[in-house]
Amino acid sequence: MRHWQQIVRFLAAVQLLPVLESGEETLVGGQAVLEGVMMRSPHAWGIAVRKPSGEIVTHSEALERPSEQHKWMGWPVVRGVMTLGHAMTLGFRALKFSANAALEELSGRDPENKDPDDKDQDKKFEISGWMAGVNIAFSVVFFIFMYKYLPLLATTELKRVDPVFGQQIVFNLVDGLIRIAMFLLFVWGVSLWKDIHRVYEYHGAEHKTVFAFENGDPLESAAVQKYSTYHPRCGTSFLMTVMIISMLVYMAIPVHTFWARFGIRIALLPLIAGVSYEIIRFAAKHRGSLFALMTAPGLWLQRITTQPPDDWQVECAIVALNEAMKLEKQHGGELVIA
Image (tube, rainbow, N blue to C red; front, side, top):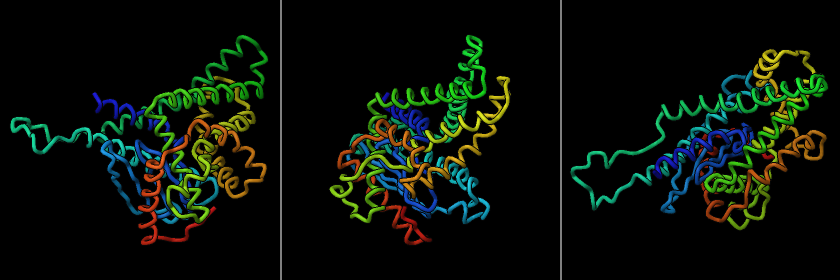
């Protein structure tokens, strides 16, 4: 039963990937995972996961920045789509590692009490490739259905109730507000689950550690804990910015049928994501700018998606960042501090 509980935790965390990760290829960032933290530098990533026994297991790999592989991937707006896609792929791998670390611990048996007739006792119960593939497909369908189809359907029904909802600006404003309300309800609802609340605590540990690194403080629990859990480059801020920009873009496109509107929402998603990425990037470096005000709702929402971590959780974030920085020094290029 506990195996399946771990799998359900994994499936729920995958739906939160855009909220938990931060995509930026020239800065240090990271992501909360199940009972741990993944940290990424421009040329490496490291992950630290605490097993139920208290042991911390780690993994690290070198990375190639998309813009170093192909120059066009570094163009404004395009780089946002490429970097975010890269970050989501890496984030999924990190989540899978953390889930399998927990499942491996649960599958462990006492070597002194092996049953010679039990042929399955040494087999590992883990998140397999087909499980991962099914969940990715489900996540895409869930996102489109939850945040594109349902808000559009609800607003279309409101238009039938009162013609005022059919006006271009009003229609897309209401559609956007419904989308944001559904997103907030989902993020808050899953936070009531104890296991996801712990993921949000590790999310806070990740943000605190990044802040300490950016300010040149020693990566020790006492120094890290003094920082805020709210960080402007968080995926939460990115998603809220995407939703705000979406409303403005849809208002400017004069389509009126249900399926035309639905098609526009899917087709323009990469462009809106790329523009939102540039706004987040600019706002993180110019925190007194008008664009920084646009990212403020995302920072407010982090009151839910990040929670104060304990020292053990901060230790995981520190270990993960140290693992990434070891490889960064070996493979590195220029590391920019925001």
